[in-house]
View (spheres, helix red, strand yellow):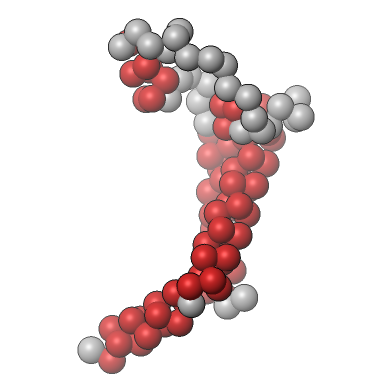
Length: 103
């Protein structure tokens, strides 16, 4: 992996850690809007591994949020890398970036 991409991933992990430490327990904008519009009570409680941006397996909310953020980053990187490999978009982006450098 290129050092630049590794640096971006590490920066994203640091942001996930900081966001987990300073995250609020108050509802986010989407939850607040659904409550104010009256359809929050009509929905079913979700099930899955990332409910309320936390992992149910971890008893500490801050740690749970940090780990779910890091897992989210890993999932997104895996998806992007898979799409890049399948479509050769990486080569296309390198050509575009090299053309911009030559301007």
